[in-house]
Length: 125
Image 1 (spheres, rainbow, N blue to C red):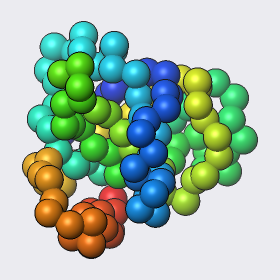
Image 2 (image 1 turned 180 degrees about the horizontal axis):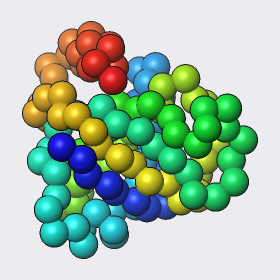
Image 3 (image 1 turned 90 degrees about the vertical axis):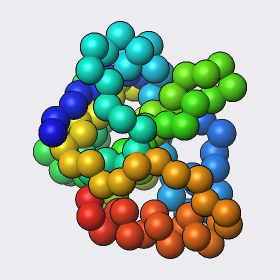
């Protein structure tokens, strides 16, 4: 399974950062044009920035990528936790490559359950 999603990095609601797993959020225009959209869920993959960013990882950064849920405008969220990367990339063009499906998207009853699952998911990335 391999899927490429590209777009500009936009500001999200900051929830990932609040629980210790900051993410980049992608503008969804290119995603909405995809003919074969990936299912909502958690994926292992990589992120590459198309413009100049000071990277020590030869351009690709390992990531845990989430597709979904729908936002208030009924569009799916697309976000990625960049493993070991913490630079400001707002406004930059990013390419997400989904390489492995980890699990279906689900809501958690508590913040503790969510954090425990994120830790498990990232180990698979």
